Length: 315
Figure 1 (cartoon, rainbow, N blue to C red):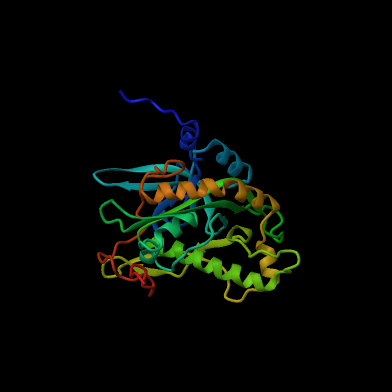
Figure 2: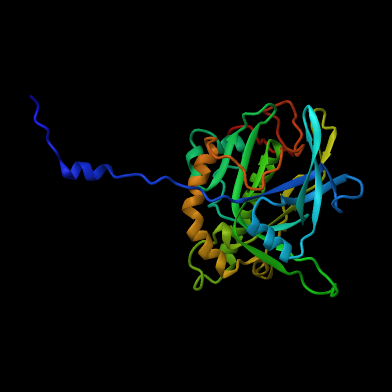
């Protein structure tokens, strides 16, 4: 006969978990010229399109914000294997956006190094969603979360300065295959600018390092390139649009609104938890995620470098 012993302190130490509910983030996607769109929904021809877009009807709050900003809609024709192409309405966000990335920055300059056993935990801790692809022809998938600034279209006063409007909820930039190289490179370049900013700001007013979310990352079309087997497909990949030379007036033009600090500090634990789920493949991208597009061209060689960078070579 065993005597049942109850240790109240041991029982209390086990605790009890709370199920984490991830906050959905509207997905922002990039059309690199292989996508076909018509800028007037319901009429006109589909032509090659370059720029950022987000699907209409996925998030009511996002739709209201974008509509009030005067952003136009367009239709993109999504090819589907074994079925007729699907025509989907999207917000046309333009060729350039500003993005305040909620991340501590990449821990390596290549996809393979970021996903290596010695770096994968640090990549997740940095709030970056990155994993090897599981679909046919997919090499990798990457996403990063942050806050979007869009440029309000100019109207009568063509000489007026650009007005950038902040959407005060997380959005998610999602890319795959070779475009992961480009998004990672854009984040690396953004860290470069933050490091330069460390040497230029008034340290008495800002004693801490410049965090990635404190400066907007201008991101848009890079140089035209040839991708695909035999490099026969012309695309415009995304790229950081930071200039090489950085000065204080430039930094001031990209400095975050005060609200971004409050948002980032609030959302950071959720972003890190989301990155963990994304990296193990447990997070389903649903908000604003359109059917898969022909947004990248596969080389047929997983170790091939993109744009001269040894993107898939661990080092």
